[in-house]
Length: 172
Image 1 (tube, rainbow, N blue to C red):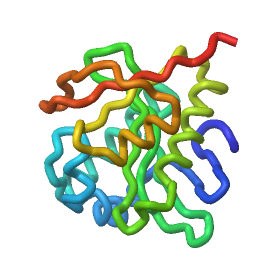
Image 2 (image 1 turned 90 degrees about the horizontal axis):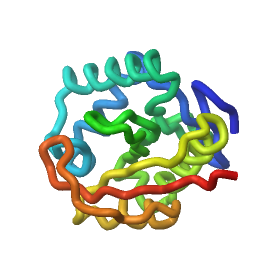
Image 3 (image 1 turned 30 degrees about the horizontal axis):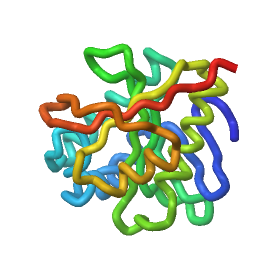
Image 4 (image 1 turned 60 degrees about the vertical axis):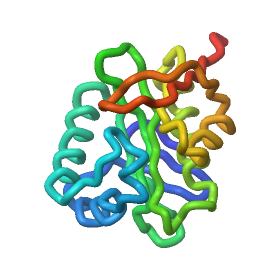
């Protein structure tokens, strides 16, 4: 694994997203199956996808970390996103991830998220991470459990009631 703008796991290449990724990004995140579990839960159009990528870029510029596109090494195909985001109105850094439904069930969410958690722990020296999940999103809850996150409580974010999870890093 490499630090900074890109990370590598066994099967995945995580890198910053750019405008060249817009059409493929929208093809994934414009799907109701995906967008229903993200933020407000509303479907996104092409213009919204472009704004999201622009916001990701500003976040990288401001904090030096952010959300990566998740690409399969075997074919270079964009299959989702995973990364770190400063959670608005809190001091929390949020782990977020989403994978294209055509790639569900292959462990990509867990693999990419584990790589990002390792980066956050070893390179950013953060005390821990937060994560949010819709209560009925069992797949996301399982990923968080595998990574060692613990459910804390329900909280309101992005206009929705979401499960709030924490992972505290060892001080060693």
